[in-house]
Image (cartoon, rainbow, N blue to C red; front, side, top):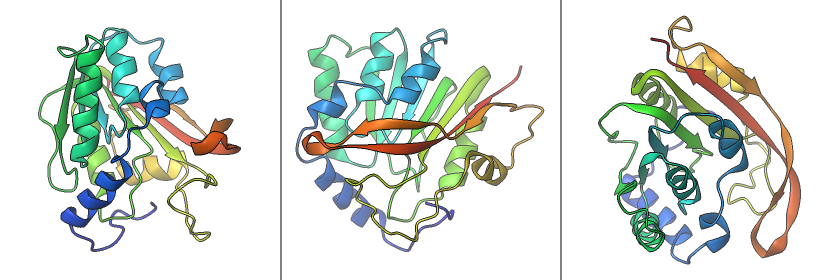
Length: 216
């Protein structure tokens, strides 16, 4: 979504929409992390992580399995419940805290070594740039904010609007309006990859990647 506020839909409508999206289990998404997060986080020392819009929970479980203590939040109660169940089943109950949070209204307390915002897009009202700025301020010294956005529309996406503008990494950085001496940009690029969607479909997609680090 390109604007800070997408529309005037209520938080209750958003919760119902995303609850329906996660009503049916998604084992393919639970069993793997988003590839760019895995690429970026693989070289980091595990600490505390915050997963914004955790969805099916693949990122949170992947991080926890590698030693991170993860707080995972989503507006969908179904997503949060399923993630809690999967964490317990995998022996990761003490490493993953899943909470239902409407990021349009609230933000988790605490400081984090990693904040992950993977495809934090929604058709509902969300002050996305305010959320991401808050996330940057929630980083501990040396911590990283990893923002991966859609840069193109996959055939299976809920958003098939041909007029959608996907902000580039530098446009996202400009909207964050951070002090770049304190939050230098480590990565800003638009890689292509082959993605697999529901029903075995595949397509080449573009990801918009922004990584900023909080200095001491």
